[in-house]
Length: 138
Image 1: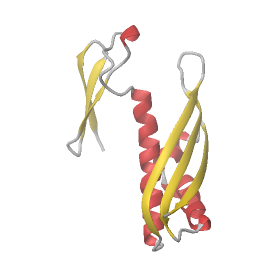
Image 2: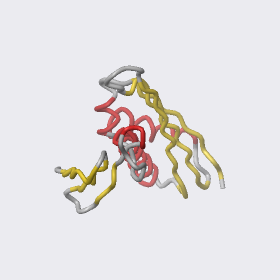
Image 3: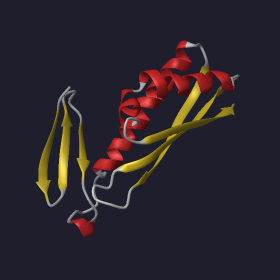
């Protein structure tokens, strides 16, 4: 896997992936940015949320669960020092479906957290990561 990050100006960068996708990263005006892109640390949280959501959806679908939506709300706390690393990350999954059992969703979240999500497992070596979920029946 390889990505390239190219400086545009100020503190704006364009990240390009080996799979052919691009994203703009920028900072707030008080740090020399124009606030027209995501912050790099926000992208890190998106990666954790996306990786874990991918797992949860795949596990539930393979278990023949009838899901219609899955949202991961990812919140984080950062230390008040330089570097301002994450001290805590919490993933809250909202899974919507027909006849969904909470035990199936709990299993999927646990498998992602403990076995499959490379991003959260890697970060959990340095950051406290917690998970919970809710099931919405439609």
